[in-house]
Length: 287
Image (cartoon, rainbow, N blue to C red; front, top):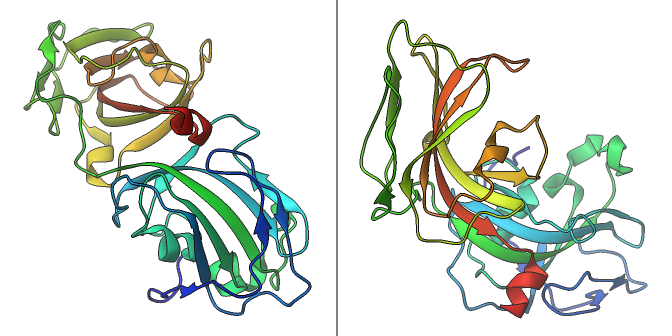
């Protein structure tokens, strides 16, 4: 959902709800008796010292959303994992695009969204939001990743693609993958580490990946390099997520995944760069 043109938020200094806790802690909001702001409003409760969030990046954040004076309709703290989305590009409600670009990683931001900056006149019935509700969010910004962010340019070569699959391109930049006619199709997920990064072994949780995929006819299927990196939840034992085989691979690595035919199509050859593991805001606060 996008609004017609950018809206500049006003500094929120009057009739601001009380917010409990510090960065990384699940907040509780206490609302004043006054009516909510009619303008898109923003208050920086804690300014971080990280990079400034840029339009077009993948933003990772913990958050809590509440209807003004009403119920909490969503929060990431209880899930134990931050959310990730392209910011400033229409992937989220307009009020997020218009308030979070320009903030610093490590910040806690309080924002108030009038209906036209939230879900509009239709609201969001699934979340119990009507077309007249003002929405308030507390957002803890954990990370921001540029659209050209890849794995390590100096990752250590570790393995080769099998016969029939060719992977080219510099490490740390967009790769190319080709599948030759007659190449045997994979019957199960096959994971080959092409270059090994020096980061931590990728744990369960939110992973940031860049990948490019082609099918077995060598037809391009998808590339995150065309938009923003992907923020994916990885859980041990989740057979439905083919990227789950990246668990335990060092951050910074480049990996070839051969994915068999399944309900989602295929088979596919996917070259993935493991860009980062994103901690929760609470974990980031603890260092």
